[in-house]
Image (cartoon, rainbow, N blue to C red; front, side, top):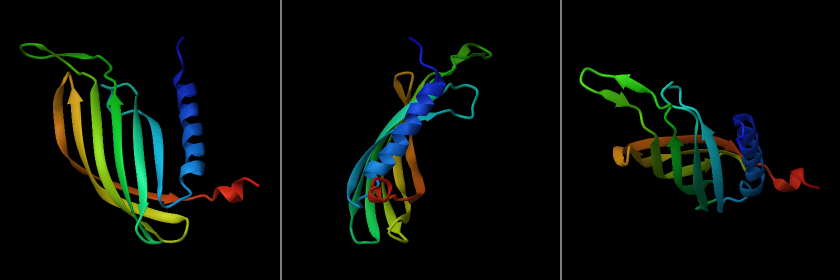
Length: 148
């Protein structure tokens, strides 16, 4: 049975919306996520990823957010002729470990910033390793204001 990308995207959207309502209420919390990605490069088809993230409240305005995620990029299986051999683009997986700091401007509005370490694998080997950064801005919705 083949599932269309529209159905997968719709299901992912519903999971994100309902996960935000459930897990976004407390400053000390844990959340799980699933995402669909499509790189701008024509060499890759769409892929998917999973994430687990926690929030640890330090004060009313500051929290630390450790995160662990996995992303997969699926190759379009193109083969490119080279001078002496054919070069093939393979699937790429990315594992990311990070910890960001969050600052709450108000009870609901916040911003996060922090470093992230990543390991990229492809063709059964490590193809990249490095450090990057994360930035996010968000809004926490109270579940009591939605459900009455």
